[in-house]
Length: 208
Image (tube, rainbow, N blue to C red):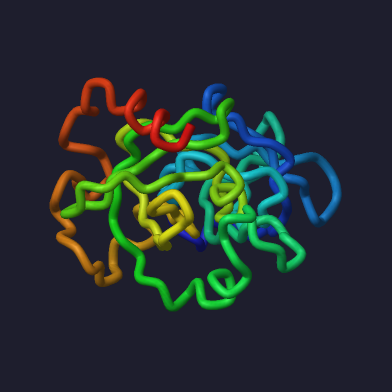
């Protein structure tokens, strides 16, 4: 994608809604006028499979016969949280020191948006990491799929390991991880191993 196209321009706005199942969503246009179409493939090229409502996004926009369409995502910022932690299990001290925690590569074991939680596995470690939907939302994400590659900032919660922040895989590919970077994910963040049978049932029982 070249940014020298005179028909393109950079626009910043808030996510109106995005549905990974439908494969698209819309962005409120800060310049006024019609909403901007955001296709799942464009978001996926940025390294995310979903994006939370009211996240701020900066995109390259092209005017088409069907209206404004995002052709490239440049930046995603999570929704405003008024400085509050996403869930009670995360104390404010953790939020204040969040950026000091290392990003660790992980694979989504399962995630149920209706239940509001799921689990992931960090490479080189056998423990499950609890994923809460509000942590996803505060990280600018709305949903996760089985086997999706992510990067997590992990803390010890009252019931075990839990993610304090979730980032898209492509966003952190160039960073240095604490664990091995080739254990289970390829460069696109795709899982190379199958989901363990019965994993959801065991994890669900632990966190009830």
